[in-house]
Image 1 (tube, rainbow, N blue to C red):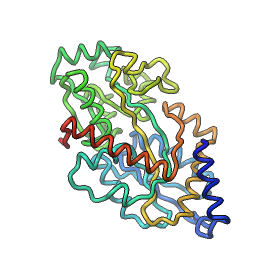
Image 2: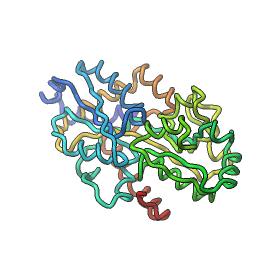
Image 3: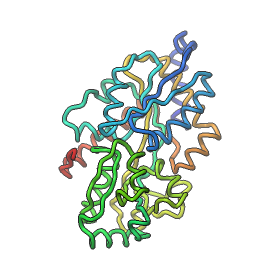
Length: 322
């Protein structure tokens, strides 16, 4: 939280008294565009965050799910929204991958948006439908996949999503052949995974968390440096024998370019207060999330670094949209 505090202190020192634009904002409901259908990881964090901000701001924050094209449809819509502080965009790691996978996008993450803050970060988790795959650990899963090449499928939130690249990275590192089945978001993919239409998934822990706790999915391993909060019984991939398999899913908030700086700063301040609330701290822990620490330029620099990193992964793996 120290970065949040230093950012707000710097903003206050620079601006002195908050301009009228920030003082009067918001005077009507605010829209948060989530570029995936309900039930996915972005949605899982956007809804409790919006509920908390609604309480703080005294105006309703309305989630608008605009899924499609691996999260790019909603991003394009948000990029063209009026920059008046009444439309915000909650995207994530998928949007730093997209430029390397999709040859033509109708938005540019760095040029069309203002980075506000990191919202959450969770490790990817390898999950299977226990009725389709009986393996209970990573060694057993890899052995099953090697014994059944091309007979197992994995769902993703769409071509170019972190789920997709995490799956391709896993296949390359384990020398297994698993069929990729892209969906319009993690929510629909999870529904088919639990229904048995696909067998496994490389998902962000936030969207799988409740299904793992409910026994509908079996968590094999998390792809992080350490075990996730609330999931101490799920080993890391490194602990399970695959030390180089590390993938995280993160989500962030952006404003359309041109949104008044005082309004962006006000939102950053409100986010700081929201993340300090007991309600969100409990919700984030329940979803296996790390607390956010990046705001403003620091978040923008992080996003730029992620874009470069994923470009290298895509190039090395010759990964293309199916």
